[in-house]
Length: 160
Image (cartoon, rainbow, N blue to C red):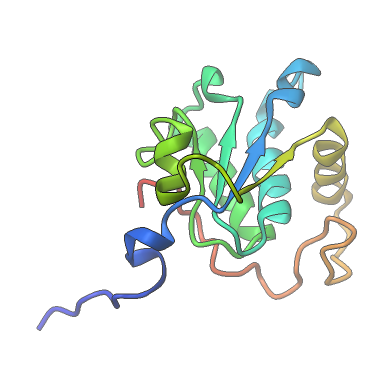
């Protein structure tokens, strides 16, 4: 017979809501994406996964960039490489994040949810890691990969 997914983790609504807000508006204000447009989405995904770790992030400030399906795939692949969250939300882009309040679910007011501003320095650090060709040291302090092939990230946007 057919199996059923377990009633646990990201299969439950309460575990699909964002527990971290990542504000990317400073990246856009700094002129990104620009000449590095092809590298923007995977680099952003890597930086977001590294900051989020096991928390489900809601990324704000980039909906107007209207990422394509391929750009979202590149973001998701890199997100799953550096973080261990089961999914992410991009406010105004992914299906479960029409707005920030929806992405946050029960914590829709945002009270008690940490907000981190993604800086050009976060982006540059992620780019240096991805562009180095060097193996990771295994820790997250340097912005590197966790050394075990990622985690449970595995390419999931909020649409599943």
